[in-house]
Amino acid sequence: MTPKVGQRVRLAVELAWPGEVTTVAAPGEPGAAVGFLSLAAGVEGTVEEVTVGERESHEVREYVRLSSLLDDFGHQMPPESRNRLAEQVAALEPEWTAFQARRLRATLRVRLDNGFVLRDASEQVFIPA
Image 1 (cartoon, one colour):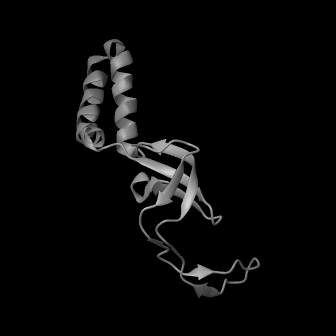
Image 2 (cartoon, helix red, strand yellow):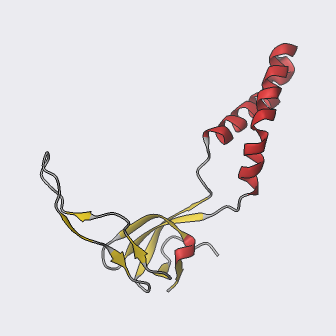
C-alpha cells in the first residue's frame, strides 16, 4: 500500500549516511568532518509528498515521443521517412518494454519528528505509524 500525504509513518530499518557529516563552512572554506549520521529504526514522521513511478530514461522518453509522432503523423509522411521513424521506434522498443515490466514504485518525502527530511526515500523503508 502506498502511503498518502499527511500519513504518519515510522522507519522500518536503520538508515546510515554513507559519507562524512561536515559542518557548513563559510564560502571558500572547507567544512570540517564531525562524524557519521545514522537514523534509528522506529523514528516517526509525516509524509509530505508521494511520487509514484520511476524516472524515465532518455530512451523511454524518446520512444514515447517518436511513437506518438508516428501514430499521429505517420500517414502523412513520405514512405522513406515513415519507414525510418518506424525503425527508430522498433530499436527503442526493448527499453520501453522493460520500463513497463518493472513494478511502479513510490518514493516519499518524509519530515521526521527530529527535524530531518528524507527525500526520494523508497516506500519500502517505512511502515504505518
